[in-house]
Length: 118
Length: 107
Image (tube, rainbow over all chains, first blue to last red):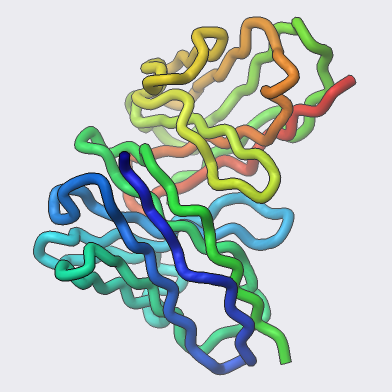
């Protein structure tokens, strides 16, 4: 069965970086794009970006495109989201989600809480 | 960016009630809309895509309709497990955007 398993919770200081992993299984890794979405505490959902695991091409939301980098490792079927220059407002749960062939999100990771605090 | 406005933001209802949630887009988005259900501490779960197509495994009491700028999610008979927060999402244009959410609580 399709699974997206994310790395564990992180606590970081302002100005630091965080790298969250999303390990996939149960399907052909290079055949489905992966999105990243975040959710601040008690807030709604915010799309961050997308990566094509086949060629590695990416597209980011303008809001944080200068601080976000999505990468992938085809040998381990894992996608990574790195966020730099962390601020308190980056405190959120970060989700990866698989894009179906028709463009919609069908499977999600369990989420990774990133807390930014001095 | 395309803004999605959901209404209401909060809804109190009883088991068995018919519930309708509206999502309005700031510009036309054809039928590129999805609806998600999210429970506390969990990832969103896809209910409806392409505005009206029921995702596999989702109960038939959920339905979606609309095109252009106005969309609705309807739960025909609310069940105890349906108390959650619901989000619409547009996939017509990058950046992808979500509505602000509708929290459905027990009356």
